[in-house]
Image (cartoon, rainbow, N blue to C red; front, top):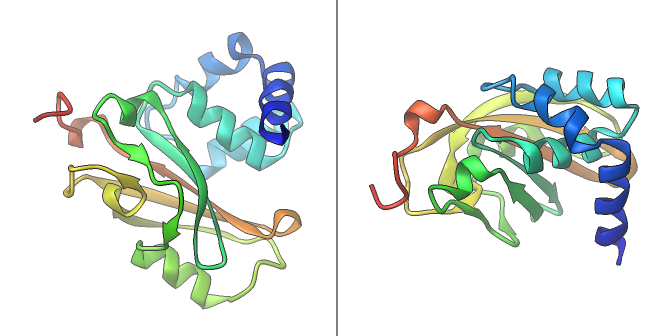
Length: 162
């Protein structure tokens, strides 16, 4: 029921006809793009990050990390087209994200950074060699770390069975 309420409020506060053109002008989005959009629409970074991924035509995803593992996540159509779908839950496998968490353990204060990883660290996919950029943001009020990933379309296979 809470997820339904979240989806309803996201559509109300960030209508696709207003946000989608902004989202899809950035083929290589960064955390800064998402933060700027969150300020513009006056919503939380968590809400914006999820909505961004849901509206993006480009390959990106968002994941919540807490208690050492992936709690939930979403991927854009850009990843879904190559049959790269998020894993429901599981241990954290990206070494850069682990290093970010270990550098300052705890989720009590906001901090952000970025790193590199592989797509299969975040999603179920047969494409084991696809590199992703990872953007980390600790969200203290929610006691989790958000991870936004994006990949260059040039690195993705043309079709899911390539």
